[in-house]
Each structure stands twice: as structure tokens, then as C-alpha cells.
Amino acid sequence: MKKSKLLNIVSNGAIVAFSVLIGARVINEFLRFNDKPQGQYSYSYRDLSTGEKLRVAHESDYDINSSGKDTIILISDSFGEGAKCGNDKNIAGCLKSTSGKKVVNLSKGGTSTGFYLKQLKKYLANSRNLSPTVDGETVVISIYSNDIVLIKDNCNYFSDNLTSISLSVDKDQLSFLEERCKSILGLTKSEYAKVMNFSLPISGVLSKTIGSYSYALLRELVAQATLRLNLDTTIGRAGYIPKWGADNSPERTLTLEILKDIQSTCDLHNCNVTFATFPNVEQLTEESVVRKSLVSFSDYAMKDNLIVLDGYTPFLEKGIENACYSLSDCHSDCDGYKTYAEWLWSNIKQNQ
Image (cartoon, rainbow, N blue to C red; front, side):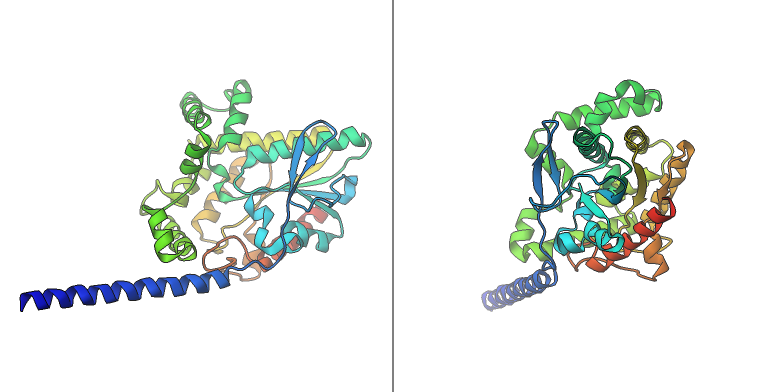
């Protein structure tokens, strides 16, 4: 009798587990369909006249040469690439169709402000080398919430500019940046990828069991929960969002120093720069924790006369509360990129 009961329990448990697994796989296929690309995206590498290589978010035959005042240069991370919307419907594509200008997209996913500065310097050096009298470009630096995180490019900038940065940070901040950057720059490629990637425990097993898209959705839900409920301030967004507004944040100080260098670079080469945040599109509200932190940084930047536009503005004005690309991907949808690009162009025209 006991053996029969045990067999029934095991049998029922197996049926439930199998049903859950099949359900997760069905959901995974739905999420895969929901996440399909809506455009063709290409990037390429260009050999510059300066001897350097430049990665551009365009196909290999796209003309990236500056036309001076008729050129807009966009630099951001994966939101600037907008890969699933394709080259025609990402921010750069929408900015091109809205403005009628040549738009050169120098964005790359997984990067931050230190990379944006390097891209801008490479592009301008090449442009001035080719056509010394051509200038007046508009440069758009689109800042996302995770740009506050210390990565290799930012740490390389810190190491290269240690003397000047030490004048802008206190002793504790300097010590933190030195120690943290030394650790980051000492990592191997695989170690660095692991440190930078927010993943759940047994992520490999979960992804193989329930499917990569179901796992991506689960990871996104956990990331949002940690931020909204403050469940664990060491994980994902909940770990870095507060740093934008913290008075003692070394990362905030370093980010501002890099943005000031971008401004100085444009001053030197006679181009006009617009800084703007890009919103976390899964929660587009005035009371968003992310928005409040980014607005706090904008206020902080004003002390150095650096204006950082609030990228939530066009979405709030239109009453858009969520602009995620799909259920499993909280990059912006294509309409969101269009909304953002039109707002950028409106601000650029006002400042011309």
C-alpha cells in the first residue's frame, strides 16, 4: 500500500514537472515570435586616414564622411544601435528621416561614456585630417542608466587622466576608483564578461531548461523587482541606479569628467554637442526611480554648466508608459526610437 502510494506521488510529480517544462517551452516559442527583428541591421569597421579603425553602426557602403553643419553624429550604447529595429528605424535612422541630415551612428552595445569619447575623437580627427575647413557638426551623446557602471573604457580614461581627475574627487573617491579600476583592468576577457553580465543563479541550466527567451523574461522581471522593491542593492539596476544621485559617488564624478571632456573636444573641433539621457522604457513615469536619479545627475552636471536633457520628456508628453521592444527585451520598440529622435531634433533645432 505504501509502495503504491509512493509510486502515485512520484508519477504525479513527474507529470506536473513535465507539464511545467512543456508550458515553459511553449511560452519560450511565443516569446521568440514576440521578439523577432523588425528591420535589417548592419555594422562595419572603417580604416581611417589617421591609421585607426572605427566601428560604425552602418553597412559597409554607407558614407560616414562629415558634411559639417549638415551632419549629426550619434553615440550611445545598444540603445543607440537599436539592432532589432534595423538601421532605418533605430534612433539614427529616425533622426535621419526626421531632420533630412546625414546621420553617422557611432554607437555600440555594452559600452559607456569612455567609449563615446574615444569614438568622437577618432571620428573628428579623421574628418579634420580629410577636410580641415569642414566643421560645425551636431554631436548627440545619448546616456543610458547603466553608463554609470565602471567598465574598461571608463577605467582606461581614469588611468590616463589620473592627475586631472584627482583634482575633482576627494581622497576616498580617488582611492575607490584606483582600487576598482585596477581590479577591472586586470581581468581576463572571460572574467570581465562574467563580472559585467547580470545573470541569475544556475543561469545556464535555467536557459537550457525553460528556453533562452523564457530565461530572458525571468531575468528582466527579477531585475525590475530588485529595483522597485529594493530587494538586493548589489544586483543589476538596483546596484547602480542610486549612484547617479549619490553625493559621494565616485562613478558619478568620473562620468561627469568624461562628459566635460566630450564638451571640450567639441569646443576644440568646433562642433555642437547635445547630451540627453535615454529612459528605461519599461517604466516611463515621472516618479520612476531611474528618472529621479538621472534628473539628479543633470542637476549635478549644471554646476559645470553642462546641460543634460531629460529623455523621459517626449514619452511623458505623449502619455507612453511602456515602450519595451518585447516581453523579453526592454530595449525600446521602434516607435519609441522615433519618438525620441523627433524630440532630439526639436531640441537640436532650438539650439542652432
